[in-house]
Amino acid sequence: MTTKEKISKYAMPNFGARDFVVSSGRGAKLYDENGAEYLDFGAGIAVTSIGHAHPAWVKAVAKQAETLAHCSNLYITKPNADLCEKLVSYIGDGKIFVCNSGTEANEALIKAARLYGDKVAGCEGKKYKIVTAIDGFHGRTLGCVAATAQKKIQKGFAPILEGFEYAVFNDIESFEKVVDDDTAAVIVEPVQGESGVTPATPKFLKALKALCKKHKALLFFDEVQCGFGRCGKFLASQRLGVKPDGVSMAKGLGGGFPIGAIWLAKPNADIFTPGTHGTTFGGNALACAAALATISVVEKGKLIDNAAKMGERLAAGLEKIAKKYPKIVKLTRGLGLMRAVLFNEPYKNGEVCAKLRKNGLILIPAGANALRFLPALNVKASEVDKALKIFDKTLGEL
Image 1 (cartoon, helix red, strand yellow):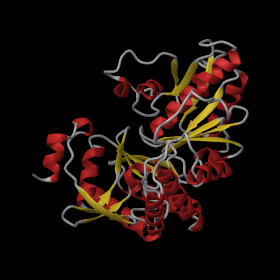
Image 2 (tube, one colour):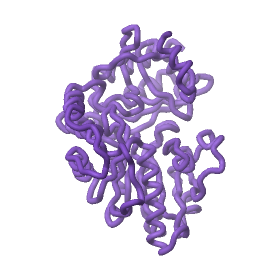
Image 3 (tube, one colour):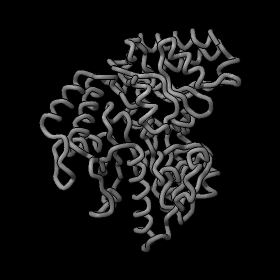
């Protein structure tokens, strides 16, 4: 039985029909089961932030696995302590909770918001509302499904968790209509990823922070996809010039190893008291060692600066291609190494994505009939140019 046949027979079908079997990766390249080579500009949906099988990362993970992988959060490990310290040094005065994924991180923000609301109101269940942006994406657990204002994500899971309201992204007047004194927190992505890579404007985020302050609500940023250097600063919100009260992180943080985290600013950094939140695997030594190794590679290679530089190179190339094919490309947008191309009808992102793969380029579909460019932060100029060349060639074949 082939690998594809095993998946079809034994794995649940929630990821749809899949016909591409990946066998290995190295740097910016992926290899399929037949040995064919592909330029990976999806990076596992912004996960393999330093490329595949980076030698320093592999060495650090192997060393930690030989030493200690897990011991439970009843005890302390040095990798966990070091990671918390490192993240605080990048984000600011506050504290860290380490978990296993972006969805878990956002669930933690939701619980933190509810605890904060109870503290401010002086009783339970009065200041409880959480406001999120339409077309945002925060995960697929029931809490995060409620936070995700997309009907296609919520369909089939009624009754949806109560206490969430939605407003139009980048429209402060829309948020003003729903944020009030009963609002505990607002959660938005500084760059909406799954719906087609839409950056927030600095003006909108600054106004949103002022609105939250007015109603004594917390402002949380979901930086699961747009954070960790991808947009040219450690956090996308740092590039956009607005500091939140809390942040969720994951994806690129582990360089390919499952990990998530939240940061909460003081004076709410101690909102989780014993018994209010926890995790079995979160913050394990192996995951934290992987994250520390990833951060070390980013620091030594000055990869956040590279993300900004290569992001501009990629953006300029995509704009040039968009002008060349105005009937195919509707527009391009993004920030740093988080870019998208939106297609006009009748061209479909899924079909274009499949043709690109046949030509040796891996991209990631997104909402709004878009394809995402999410290469590793250490992507080279020659690799950006090659990706643009393949993209140009493929559009010319449509």
